[in-house]
Image 1 (tube, rainbow, N blue to C red):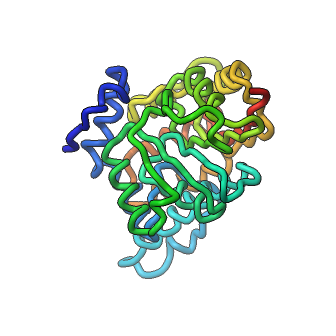
Image 2: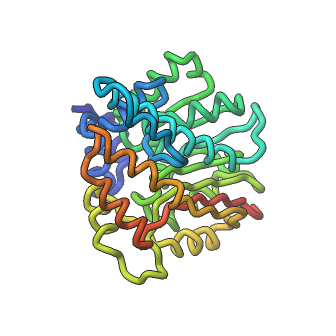
Image 3: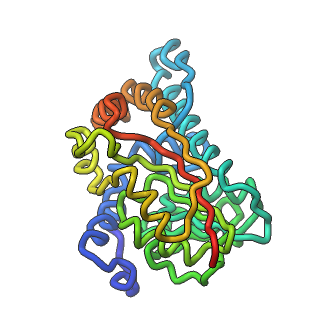
Length: 290
């Protein structure tokens, strides 16, 4: 069990935040999918994948079949992170990026490798902070990539200090209006925010049983699609690109059903995506004004 530091009450301000943090602090083994996939090449992600899988991994020697599936799932999740970084636009080495809900740090390391800039990850899990900072030290980039025990709703970073910010499947744990208020404060004028998230589809009406099941499984609160755009508009974030990744992520989930790492959440995801009640979106937005 993680021993919390004296700043815990300042970072975890609600009982819900404390419950989310406790899950990630005390149940790292329950997160074995991300752990096993990260062991492929040392990039530990906390999100899902996109793209067409190489289904030849399902054929061949049975004794190595699961290893092949894990490697392919990891390739797809890394492709998702690459796509997110593609949408950050031009970033110079003397600029600064922030990863909101940084997990074990995989995308932060990819961003530093691509742009050569400083990257700050924030998460309310002290276990994740420790794990990711150890990774940064092992990679020899701890002078550029740092992970902080901070709340992304109130980071404490200086105004206009970030060229870009991203969240990757973390917005369903927070109030979007509060989150984008903080991100707008942090972004320099013209800075870019990129979000990849699952959201409920307002067009289909109320929340489906599959979406509710996903909510319950992860202890989150999946937002409707429209709420992202309303919260952005209120906080000077103007979308420049919106991409529906739903069709691109379904093959990842189909392949994951073949893995011994399957957790049981695969079928609700597939059902929700196929019935149209759930969407997997990428939204890139620019900060306008000051």
